[in-house]
Length: 303
Image 1 (tube, rainbow, N blue to C red):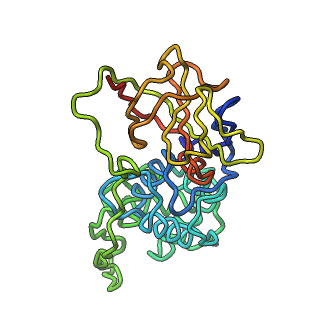
Image 2: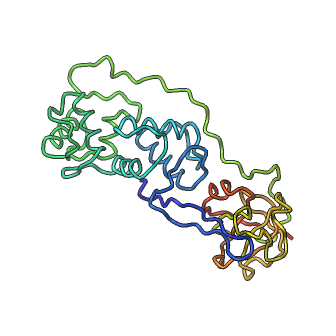
Image 3: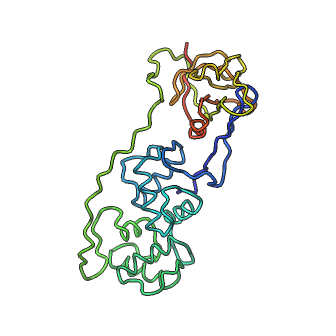
């Protein structure tokens, strides 16, 4: 569920004194189109669970399919359809992927009531309150569809009610013409995550050791940044240079490495916040550094 997500905003640091940190925020920074982030994986899994992500796996990239899924979800649940995941959308998505039962309130309950009302099983106000009337409507639906009768809208009941599995569900004794399953939409495939932005390939037999690290990102292209690393590399004069900040006790300065999703780089910088199996990747663009966020990656030490 989306409550598992911890959205991050990269805070750019200097190249010599302090690496960029990754600071948790309460969805002040929305998930939006063209972002790469671990939280997008979770978003896509949640959307798929409730029928709004039509792709065979999560990718971590917020592309057209994810955007359209978020927008459709927002429209269906009465949220302004921006296509971005802000605090309101995150909260409703958490509700939508949770068990709904007596005593619950919110847009997810209203959405449930709307579907039950369309099936003439709920004959009261769409008020978003899961009371006795809503509970009885769920029980009636479960009875009509040979489901476990508990009055709780769990995954199986919601999948049947919203027809998420693509199965035709008998919701009433009278057949309804509009209950036919629509043809699946043909959408462009969600892009596979690129292994790295450059054309390099992972070394075949040069690696002497592989370690797993937490990787954040920083830039030298900012006010007050000198652009000169701890080993003397002038990043502003060499903007295409790939440099990582490291804990020298883990990766000695001057070591050539291959970073998953980043490419070949030199361990040429340090930072006060880099400790143990942590690294900071240099990007010339602040936007690119922010979009990187925090990722768990493998680093190959090259001989």
